[in-house]
Image 1 (cartoon, helix red, strand yellow):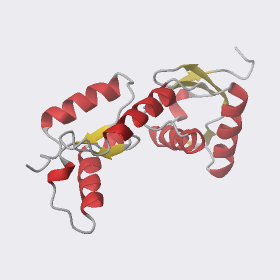
Image 2 (cartoon, one colour):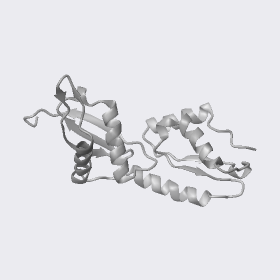
Image 3 (cartoon, helix red, strand yellow):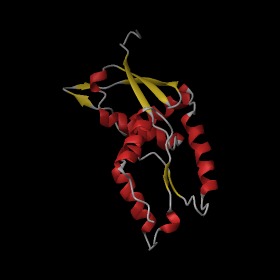
Image 4 (cartoon, helix red, strand yellow):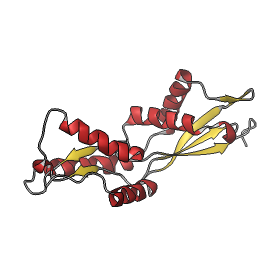
Amino acid sequence: MQPSGVTDQDAKIAGEAHEAGKGVIIVVNKWDAVEKETGSLEKYKKEIYDKLKYLSYAPMIFISAKTGQRVHKLFELINNVAEQNAMRISTSVLNQVINEAIAIVQPPTDKGKRLKIYYGTQASTKPPTFVIFVNNKELFHFSYERYLVNQIRKEFGLEGTPIRIMVREKNEKGE
């Protein structure tokens, strides 16, 4: 019996886990039953990530519950994702990463106004949630948020966990 791919119910459950900020691992069972050819694994991965685009941060593992193939690796992965979901990043280290990201890709402008990012701090874990203080929330576009999330993920891993960003305005006087 072949793995059935991502069902609507799988996508619904995965979406709920993502929205709830839970660590996520994509587990493909019955891998022992698949007729493998060159590229089978990559083909399956691509199909699954195409259907679950919002889980691009989630590691994927191919197992067989029947034969026990790679099941021990699943437990290692569970522990790793739980650690990543609970990770704390110091404010100074986070701000180094944010400042490097800003140096690479300048924050967006709109009608002559430029987004200024003053600093960021981690507000909570499970999932890692960061508060970014800016001059104008309206200028903080979703695409720039995604860029910062990708830079944070690149620097700290955070495999298998969503990253949340909250944007707060802070005026020039520090209020």
